Amino acid sequence: MRYRRSYRHPHKSRFVEMFGDVAINPNGFDHATVKDVCESFFWIMPQTPEYIEGSGIPYITSKNIKNGKVDFTGCKYISSDDYNELTKNRAIMPGDFLISMIGTLGEVSIVKDQDGEFYGQNIFLLRLKDSVDSRYVFSYLTGVDYVKHWWDKCKNTSTQSYLKSGHITGLKILLPPLALQREFAAFVEKVDKLAFAVRESLESAEKLYRQQLSEAFA
Image (tube, rainbow, N blue to C red; front, top):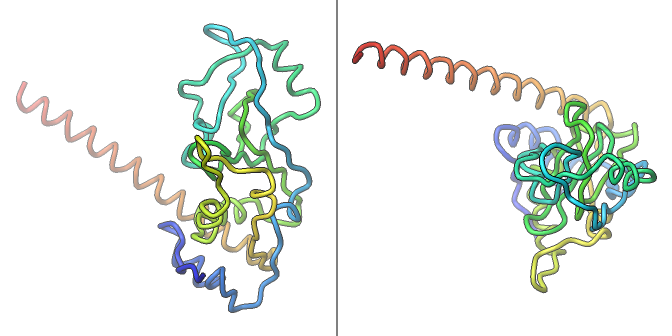
């Protein structure tokens, strides 16, 4: 099966221009699996901590991985003691990749410093090697059609869709030279910063317009 050369806007054309069709690989770049590019990886399995009301350590599920970030909206909370027990051998660290395994499949986030301490379940964690650019890998996992087709092919749908660990570690990744990975990542970062600036400008303009409109009819 041939996958269309599609990459999520606004980086699609640049990705195709630099790397071509992932399925065809016209430039003859190396391939690797997710397992190959990871220093470590593990499934954050379902646990049975006691949830607490109000403040505590956030405890997330797959549904909290959205739009490339960890969204703590609606999450439960656990005590510091439970958190320390759960994470003594398998902690979540800044820079780790988290992939949703149940429900909405294949959502990816990169853990940020500002996310602070948290834990969860039914999430797969990837800790990449230094030999790959994390921004390139993130863009690949979240934007290439081949990846979406892979998730769709692998998912199990007994009662609720889910991925197995091997489905994630066995995913094939196009692996151009590190210099090209970094070039693409720098382009993505530049475009994202520009998009953010434009959104802020539009929001400020809309706020000013509403303020002036309100004053005009006061």
